[in-house]
Each structure stands twice: as structure tokens, then as C-alpha cells.
Image (cartoon, rainbow, N blue to C red; front, side):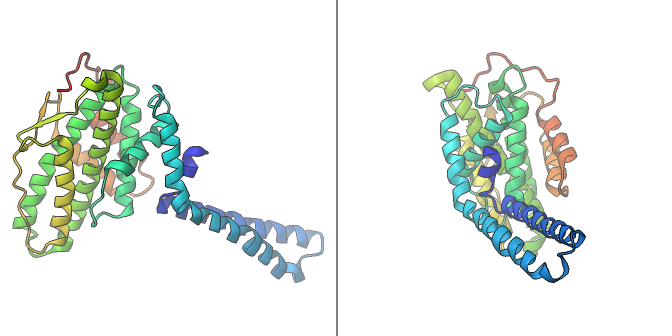
Length: 303
């Protein structure tokens, strides 16, 4: 219940809850009318019954739902703060969702071209990946591999999209939107994974724990690379003249094992394009980034 309430801060979640509420009130109205008809009191009282279900039931509850536009994020922040000191916060699905969604809200600034659907896919993917990583023997090692593989997928994708936009879609901003939105969602997911990785590293390694290092990126951090990729998505989607992605190739230290950027991109694109519900496409992405049988790496360096 707590997780459901915190998610009502999202517009799509509120719309879904409002549809359920409307359907429930309509069903209640029909059941009430059926009972009145059976008891011989129905026909002339339908206006009164409609007012009861519409004005006295649906409208107050709908107003409460809209209040969660501001209450939802506040509840999520309160719940995440309560979980912050618990060592088992990544051990249970409910707490994983609260912590990861709070880190997403704090660390990710979605590009203007991205829609709420892309933000929702990024959040859902991040929560699912962290929950999957928690089932591995070494949570920190699994998060390292997942973050690094996704980051390399973003790096390869942003270069390809930049070249494609410059050559084949130079005169059409709209033609770039689909690719750019999916890329932005993957970059947002990776930024969230990095925040989770750093949170776990701080717990496991103490003050000596350091973020994933990115070599060949002007000495900047991996977080700076991902933020730059998110900004570039807006440039691709909103600028008539396509700017070049001129950053050097991303090199992570230590490099991830069995990284296949093209496989990550393909699996993510399938999930990003899949209609709701998209569990099968999400499972395919999860298996690509974190294979179930993959052994955790012991003694993983994070320098």
C-alpha cells in the first residue's frame, strides 16, 4: 500500500487509479439500480443514485487522488529516508522500488523531448535491474556489471544516433524523435543505476568507496558523461542543425565482463517500443544486462 501511494505522484499512475475509480463507481451505480429494480423501488430514483455515486463518492475520491500530485513525492521521500539507514533496503521488492524511484527523482533530469512514458520505462527498468542484482551473490558486483554495460550501450548508441541524424535525418527533427527518446530513457536508467551503485558502495566500502571511473572523458565522472548524453538528446531533437557528439569513447575502469553494447541497445529498444503491458520485453532486457546464471565477481575493484 505504501509503495502504491508513493507512486500516485506520477501522472500515469493517477490516471490509472482514476480510471479504476470511475469503473468502480459506474459498477456501484449499476448494482444499486439493479437492487432497487428487484425490490420495486428503482425506476424513478436513478437521478438520486447517480448524484450519490457521482458527487458523494467519485468526486471526493478523485480530488484526493489529485492531491497526490504533491503528496506522492513527499511520501516517497519520507519512506526513502526511513529506509536509508537499513542495510536490507535492497533485499525486498517493495523497499527496492521506493529507494530506486527516489534516487531517480533526485539524480535524473529527463530531456524536454522525453515523454512521461519514457520516464516510466526508465524507472521500471531500473527497479527491475536492481531487484535482479539483489538476487546475485554479490550485489555490488552485479550493479557494477549492469551499470557498466548500460553505460557502454549509451556510449555506442549516442555516437551512432549522432552520425545517423547528421547524414540521414539532417532535415527532419521529427525523424529523430523515436531513436532519441529511447536513448534518453536508457541514459536515465543508467544514471539511476549509477546512483544505486554509489549508494551500495558507500555502505559496503565506507568513505573509501569511489564511483565508477570513466577514462578518456576529459577526466569527468561517469555521471557527467550520462548527464551530457541526456543533454545531447535534447540537442538532437530540438536543434535544426544537428550538433556532433565529439566526446571521446567511454572507457570504464575496470571494464565490464562480456559487454555487448549492441545487444543492450537492441533489447532496450524492444522494451521501449513494446506496448503495455511489456513484461516479456522487460525480461529480455534484464537477461541481456544481467544473465541469471552469471556468477558474481568477488573482490571487484571500484577505482
